[in-house]
Image (cartoon, rainbow over all chains, first blue to last red; front, side, top):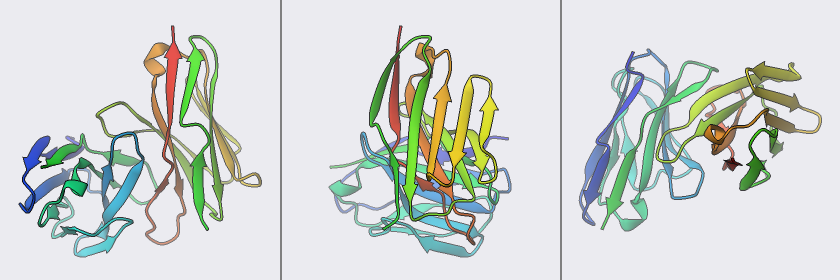
Length: 111
Length: 113
């Protein structure tokens, strides 16, 4: 199993540009999550999904959108990038109430 | 209001000693509590899970306790090594429908040789 994979690893965006952060898992997990982590800070939940076709907002959803058309994939869309979205983004998945598996992260800079 | 707190932002400890990290919470009733390790620039990695009806869980040099009366979990690393230096996160699993894990901000542990 590859676990949770994220692409790209790094990205620099200009203010106002859009992009999609990709996340995929091959463990048949029902729950998937997107977090952002600013330097020296904790994880903040952006969006999550409890299964294909179902998504819900987390703590900091503004400026982001998600979709979950399959069990495996959970892309995060940034529209009109702003400097405040400079962060490291982690995708995670888990099966019911068990441990959560995190991807390696995407480091995004908006200038 | 609901809060989860890891008491120390940073903890320095001498190699070979036992490191003890604390996770306190208020106004939650978690069914499980989990601990994760995060190295710089990497995603968190799961270490241990303890259920509300378990007092203690061990895995190699790691020990976790869970006191639902005190609303506290303690995470111990015995015979600490410099390789144990990392940030450690606690997370509450409310096991309430589809509620996501609630993560603490983490404690950065440095083990000094």
